Length: 540
Image 1 (cartoon, one colour):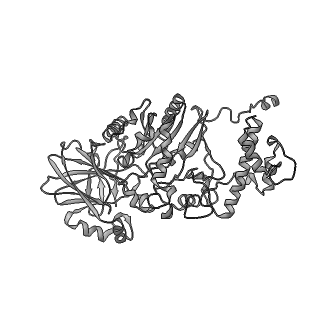
Image 2: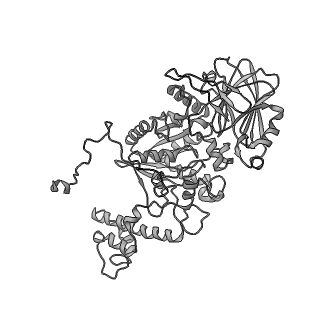
Image 3: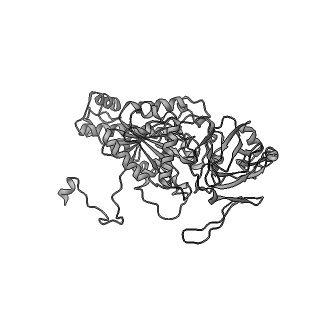
């Protein structure tokens, strides 16, 4: 048995295991001492208003660790007989031409360096340090408090390293080499999460379009219907790279893992075929880092016992995630094994999305966390529905009544009212009855700025199916159902995108028809699969 162990064999613990499924892939995050593993920024201690900041004492420890890492790398190369001239120069710099750093001995062969002795000389406890996860101040604030200074928020700062031009320059080389591109989009903000420059990023490489938040779609939504709809919308937007050889559409949930294993298996197969790595790209806040965290966590054992302050960090993902767009700032590398890697990349801001105007607390309300409960209102001429204080949908002129089905986060308060009273009602109740925005409502409405109005006409397709969806970029969409012609006026903050598209859920309007009691909208009750009657779902 000892001879087998010397050859690399190990006795397997829990030989029979407790899982009849195939073995899980082992993925690992590739980090180094001078890079924040959560966002990819290089550590620095000069300016806390810039990415990668660490207090001086912590930064000095990371500098010492980087020396250990470099000597370990050189030692491994020397042992593997892969020593180069550049390695020799680096070795002499690290050791000041002597043996181990700081010693007065004669030059020592790199393969003979004792890394543990070197760490002890530098005052480092490698065992203790290995149990700690060091992240920059920006990531610490996002992970623990969900907040970040505006000077560290992409789209709100003039910092060159956080500019969209810098992010695009990082993505440019992907098209110039063999690679597999996983393009993540948000089903609830499809128009606001599809990168118009995706074709340029991918080049001729295969593209897997991963439609995130499939678990939050209404239960009656068919998988094939959604995939076909996604392909039609991409074609309409002029995104052609999905048609590259090997291209595919996959419905996933980055939070629950639904569909992720199948998508990763497809990506691995394509990576082998093209002999390249996998790059996850997408709009800011589409869920890329959440996806990577799920992939990394599949082999991590769940902690036992209650969550307390002392063990809370065990549950945090390796990468920073936040409702705030733009948490990842540089490439973050994941080892997929067999010589292949997966890279998380910085998200690009899509113009016209309302999420760029919201505070972290408001973003939490706008981004759906649970299965969305759509609600349908009958709206006649002179009436409107307020989507919190962020949008107003009204029927104008002599249009006949139509049904408007709202597919937005359950935390957004919907309020039907007379069009003539709507503006005063928003100013009076924004931040209270109408959220988001949050209090102080009047001040937040002033910060959102003036609203632009868009008037559209929709030809109804009858009362059995929706004729079109009105998309509110960053909020969700509204399905419009009825007979005749509806003249609809949509008011949103200036610069926020509004568009019309074929309906994603054309036949589901009557399932979610609502009554309005004056204080809340109540969805009519339905029967479950077991025949029991569900209670109506309300929005207070």
